[in-house]
Amino acid sequence: MTLRPNLNSITTRLILFGLALVIASSLARVFVLSNYLRKDLTEQSTAQLLTLANYVASDIDHNVVERRELLKRIGSKFPLALLRDPHRLQAWLGEIHEISPMFSVGLSILDTSGVGLAGYPSMSDRVGKSFSERDYFQQAMKGEFAIGRAVIGRVSKLPVLPMAVPLRDGGGKVRAVLVGVTALDAAGFLDGLQKTRVGITGGLELVSPSDRLFIAASDANLVLKPAPEEGAPKLHDQAMQGFRGVGIDADARGIEELTAIASVPSSGWFVVAHLQTGEAFAPVTRLQNFMLNNAAVVMMIFLVTVVIFLRYLLRPLKNAAQHADRMTRGEIPLEPLPVVRDDEVGHLTGAFNRVLSKLLESRATLEHIAHHDTLTGLPNRQMLADRMTQALARAQRGETQVVVMFLDLDGFKPINDELGHEAGDAALCEVAGRLRDALRREDTLARVGGDEFVVLLSDLSNNAKEAAQAVANKCLEVFQQPFNILGLSCQLGASIGIVVGDGECSPEKLLIAADHAMYRAKDAGRGQFCWADECEICSMDDKKTSCSVRNLSNRKKSANDAA
Image (tube, rainbow, N blue to C red; front, top):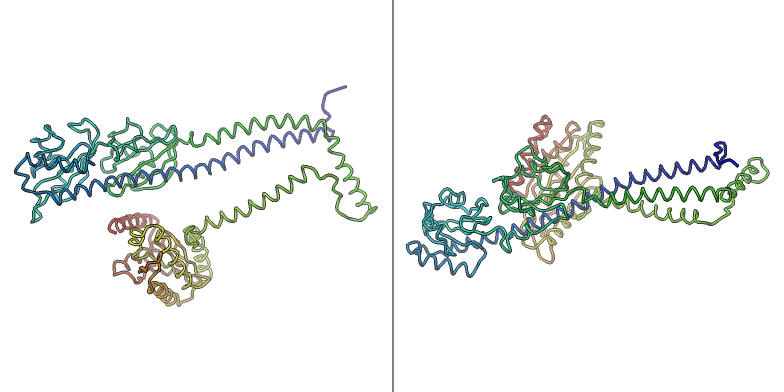
């Protein structure tokens, strides 16, 4: 008896083919599933990091605003006569500090030359000393609230953050400066950030871009340390330039991290939440090892099973082949081959078909979500870009025109701020419904931002401008009637920028042109529309377009700050 395999045997060939198939399919599953899970984990982890960063940033912003308002209230009630009596002044500060001890290190008064007059708790090292060179004093002397640079306190020897407000007389002249100092790790200030870790390798940092300084961090070694110089991690450079969001980048040590960045509006700081990808993707590595080990076991079981049961398993196949051969010779009519066994293969096929059906339904749902705004159900920016590209291509072929209308709501921010996000969402949904009813079925209405909508009119003839004006008036008319928001009557308006294109411009340039026109409509008094000079915009090169995008972003930020 020989154990040498017979390569001409169908049994041997099936065994070798089966082994090769098992190996190839196992490796393919490891590769495909690893990539899929890595992408899925990236999305979930970055979303969780961004949620954490936004929560921490909101909490810090609340703490800063709370202290700012306290200083302003104290300053508004300060009796200027106490400036001539240091003992009474210190007693008064003590009473204020006992009532509202938000400034854990204490409160102090500086005269207009920056010399300390009094402080509480008693600060002998501050009274009589000059603080005129401090940034918060210089800014307060200009009549503004000031947040100073975080430093190591002279008295407390702890990392502290000073804040200051000017004390004015009845004529508005600055007579002194009130300073409040809080320890960074004081309860209810930044202690939560400094005690929070993200997983094992991650953490949080609070960065001041203007000072290029780490104000607070989960890693105590980073507190009050300079931020990396420009040219360090790219995502950090982008954050210093105003980027807020999520991304993947290597840290200063070259270790890849998932990073989320959120703003602290009241101070100009930003919060960074980060986690090493090695930790985030540890489940993928474990799954890879499990799948490889599992594949090795399966191959051994497969080999033994095939050798023992192959003849038995091939018997129905042989009978089916004979049955088919008889049909080809005309001995029996053409008919479905008989099903010999209702075994696991049949059950698995039925189960697989049911799973596949559900997967197809899920994919259709995901595709809808990927191309539509989840709140209003309108097309999102991605679908708008696709439709604009198609419309411009048709316009170039058919010598027709397209119109892009950029709408920004007037009066939305007070509703969102005063009535809450639920009211804001309800307002956006009602606005979307009214605008949708005002447009034709072939027109595209998309939501591209918080309270920003874009209308695309395509396949227009030479009367494009008249058609656009009629549609713009219809859009403005929908805001004539008040909106019923959570049982309250609210008034909203819109400012519209309009641009006409003929297929020569890119979608980005048309959107920039319409957005610029929208801002001109706002500057002109809101509740109206303005036309864009599309030819001028289309003549811009890519470098100018990039500059326009940056300028537009800065302009939006300024408008939001002003609001």
